[in-house]
Image (cartoon, rainbow, N blue to C red; front, side, top):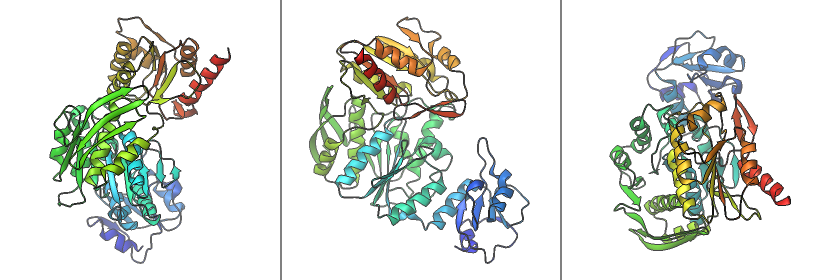
Length: 488
């Protein structure tokens, strides 16, 4: 693509050198990935400034630079006010606005995003659509999966892969959209058709200064539906969340509410929870139906209601929705039982916020036959204020708690554990810093009918310590401990 044509999309910039006749073969934001014919866009990150790698990019073949600082370079430089926005505009143009050709569903909220994307994937697949999913666990296009670095990748990755999805005849894209992604502009230029808000509870307050700022970041997804009315656009919100009204006000498009306690358009009644799953009735404007599923926990009722709200807004039949929800077998690392012959139950869950931990433990409370034992820690370099809250919730709903290391990152695990346990007045807990030792110790003492919750890491297959990711999977570690315990 000619750079003269591409640059017109930015509209306002200062030019250094001539771009006439320059053809752009690719757009890159990492100098190490630059090849001949690339346009290199300098981004200022938290720890790395792309402007410092201009010469590396040129040496690797960059034929032009986009910057937001005055720089000296041997190739033309396009200086803009904001390279994050420029990158999104350029990527959208370079890949010929792929999001316009897709039905894109954006899901935001503190908890439930990943489960909801899996439910929607099942529904739209059952409806005969070819789907793609972008989220915490992976990016999936049809049956093929790819790793992702962030819950919501950067704009360049998104537009490039949305074009790939169009080329592979994908119809519907279901995407987790984090508050970080929204505040950092990673989804600029993505033309969403439907957006859904799950809930909001304390998380990421190391990044957002308070809950109101956190909620505002989430509301940006609803604002980014645009201001022009379209039959293809709608917003779906959890009416039982006190922040739902903020999301509703942020969009001009029709809103479908869902909930259990509120007067919502999509609601659940006659809810029956059991260790084997859920049975409940779903009421919608398109008709009512019952669902029987092996997913369990009240939080999964909300997840399924959200999925119904999205699907109903897209005119998916209630019979297809019902069939899909009943076919779902589970989501990796979300209330996932470790399969074994043990007379006790081990559940692995991603719960890493006070609210999500409480939801999981409340669900276990309804299922327990004997003791509830919780293994939990908190991540390093993240919001410290939630540490004692999570400790107190674990203590309140558990017969015994083992506090252990999560992903300490650059912090000392002992410091994190002190933050969690300082101030505890009850004594039914112990601290075992090494996570593997903690899991082995608890399973080694498990009795028949116990439920052991290993919280915090869920689907993750690593433990991050001092910037290095070491292989660690709670499910693998638990199963090894169970098998060892059964042999004794």
